[in-house]
Length: 231
Image (cartoon, rainbow, N blue to C red; front, side, top):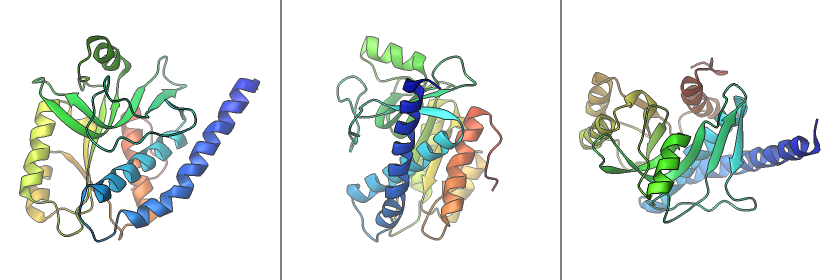
């Protein structure tokens, strides 16, 4: 084993250890009975951490864009004007990098309209064009997008479900788009299920193994692997 590889594995282990240590803190924090953008950001970051754990545990290598810190994107940003920390994903079963995992990034749909993506994994091709042309990256068939909606006082209703339906319609590749929420009412579930859209409920009633299993299945489906945790 080369010194570089050994050092990098130690760095990865350090990152995962840190993610595990803040995992419980985040899971307690975002379920507090409050409203506001800060709670939503905690929920988004919690989902981001869970997805990183699932990616790492399924054989992919994570490389952070900043070596000694993670710059959190607290609001919508463009790829080329407001840089924040992100992770580059690579996998031994792929010849090239899988892409970059960002938070709160503006992306374009098939209509060229811009949408704020809470969590998005973008292909290297779309990122190269975006940075060269100073445009929001186009979401393509190689992308993965998660909308994370935290509601402490109510469930997601029909309005939010319609917004998600519109987003999926413009992104075109709905199989790679997920709605992660604390809860949804019956009308919202009927609309989302009726259009074969992806929605997962994650709340304080769900055990940790279930929460991890959700994100594990999402990334395994994306990578065409067999999930290590079945639901």
